[in-house]
Image: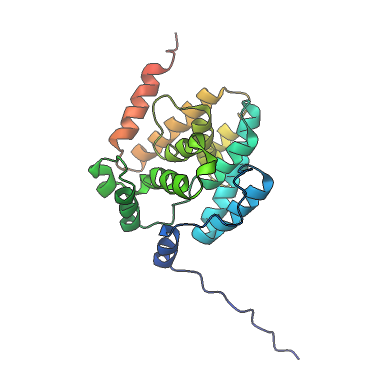
Length: 232
């Protein structure tokens, strides 16, 4: 029989369907809250993430998780915690602006109306932190803070905050020359220097692309330029 059997094509969910699904609470059944950073827990969360983001975002998230673990090992941080924070950083990435705005309202998050209405693409950090805190509290504040801060950053970034922020940009599937250069510097530069270089490239990109920059981003940029030891 020469007729090739057609594989049953599973229809990809539309953006609207994915957003609607990702907005719903996630049940924690089958998840071992006693060992939130074990390989078993990591596999479990990978399975949940796969259902709530598009395939390219999933590939990016796995790459961020691996890069976060590599950074953690280089800079003396717990690799299992870093890997989980990296995996989950884009937990709410599939939400459309209306759903992101709904999340901000649901959790009464302190985000300026300018940002909520004008730059919804930075909201998925704070909303993911809030919803994961509700559905998987066992990951802890350190992880939630790193997820919350991965889009804009913050003054006085903690080590895990910097690890996730950096991993999100320099993970190997991200085809940007400067990020590829910085990936090779892991363990050579300090974590702070690496973070600053990534922050700088991100700001430069926004300027080059003619994109708006949130006041929060400017505040962070100015803070790191004031706080950074000045070159002699």
